[in-house]
Length: 499
Length: 109
Image (cartoon, rainbow over all chains, first blue to last red; front, top):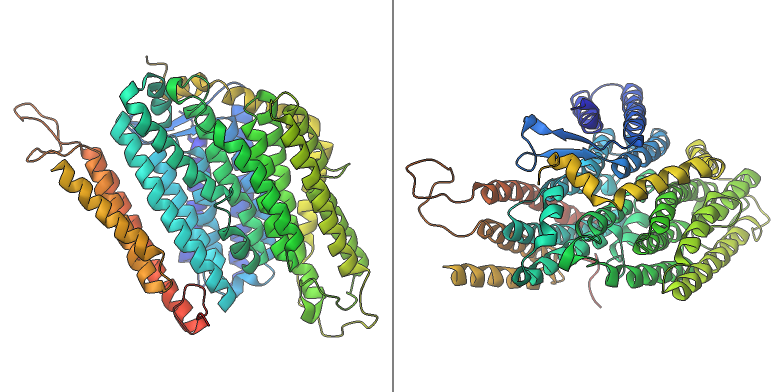
C-alpha cells in the first residue's frame, strides 16, 4: 500500500492548516509558502501519474480497514490525470492573486489550499459518501473564495451560488441514502459489483437514485437546465478565483464520467446506459445555450463565463459518445478547455484594468497602454478558446468530431459543434475589434491598476504545450479511456478480486 | 411506523421546497433547514426502522440496528449546521450590503 495515494490530500490540508496558524506572518512569506505547497502538489501529481501510467490501479485503505468496510482512496489513470490538471492549473491563479488580491480580504491562501484539498479528495475517493463530503469541502472553500474581496454584486451572486449548491447537496444525500437502502454499501467498486444483479423489483428505485446522482453532478457541471448559477457567479467574482473555478465544472463532468462508465456501463445489466438517453441531448443543448450567452454577453468576464458553459457542453458531448475514441477525445479536450477558460478570465481582468472607466464592458473605450501585446494575447486566447487551427482547441474538437462519425446522431453533433465554433469566432472577433481597433483617439491617462499579465501568458503557453505534445497527451488519454471501459479492473483493484 | 416516517419526510420536504422558493432570504434559509431535516430523517430510515435494538452485533443479543446510516446522518448533520450558519451570515451580509433582504438584492417595483 503506497502512501503516495493519500499525499495529494495531506499536502493541501496541512498547508492550509499551517497557513491558518501563521496568519500573522508577513504576506510575502505566506505567498511563498502557498506557492511552494502548490508546486509540491504538482510534483506529487506527476509522481502519481507516473505510478499509474502502467496498468496499476493504486488503492489506499484508511486505517487498513479492507474495502468495502473501510474508507478507500483509489488512484486510477483518470483520477491521476484530473489531479495533474488541477494542480497545474492552480499554480497560475495563485500567482496572479499574489499580486495583491490576497490582501483584499482574510484567509485567501487558507481557502485556496482547502479548495485544492476538496478537489483532490473528490477525484481520489472510492465511495459515494466521501464524494459528498469532499464536494462539501470544496464548496465551502469556494463560497469563501467567491465572496473574497467583497462588494454588493459579488454578495448577490454568491448568495445564489450558495443556495443552489446547498439544495444540490440535499439531493445528493437523498441519492446516497437511496443507494445505501438498496445495496447496503456506498463503496463505488462494491456498488458496481452488485448493480448487474439488481433484482427486478428494485430497478425502479435504483434508476431513480442513479438519475438523482446525475442531476446533482449535472448541477456541478453546469449542464442545461442547471447552468443558470454559473455566469453570474463566475462573472462577478475576482479573476483568479474565476480562473480556478474553470476546474470546478470539470469535477461534475468527472463524476458523470465515473458514474456512467463504472456504475452504469455496458456490464450493469438492467441499469446499463442509464444516462445515455439524457447526456448527449443535454450536452448539445448546453453548448447551444452557452454560445448564445457568449453572443449576448455584455462584458468580457460574462462572455468568458458562458465560454465555460459551452466548453462543458462540448466536453460532455464527447463523453456521451461512450466509445473509446470519444472518451479519449474528451479527456484531451478537458485540460485544453480548462486552461483556455482560465487564461481568458485572467486576461479579462488585465484588459479591464487597461481600459480605465470602461472596464471590460463592450463599449468603445480609450486606447490601451500596451495594446499590441494585449491584442496579441487576446488573439491567441481567442484562437485557443474558439478551437481554430493550429492550437490545441482545434485538435480537441477535431478528435471529438472524428469520434462522433461513428455515432448514430453524428449529423446533430457535427452541426452543433461546427456552427458553435463559428458563433464563438464571430463573438470573439467582434470583441477583439471593439477593444483594439474601434478605440477613441485620446489615450486614457488615469493610472492603470497593476494587474500582472505573466500568469495568463503561462496558461496560454500551457495551451501551446498541449498543441506541441498532442501526440503523447492523446496517447495517455486513450490509455485512460481504455481503463475506464473495463470497470472490472477498478472493481478487482479495490475489492482485491473477491467474488 | 414506516408510513408515519414517510409522511413526515414528505411533509418536511414539501415545506422546505415551498420556503426555498420564497423571495426573502430568511424563508430560504428556513427552507434549506427543513430540507436538511427531511434528508437526515430519510438517510436514517435507509438503515431500516428497528426499535429497541443496539447498533452492535453480539452474541446473546436479539438483533441489531444498522449503525452505518447513523454515522452518515451524524456527518450530514454536522455539515448541515455549518452550512446553515454560513448561509445566515451571508444573508446578513447581503442585507447589510444591498440594503434589503430580497434574494435578488432589489425590491420588485
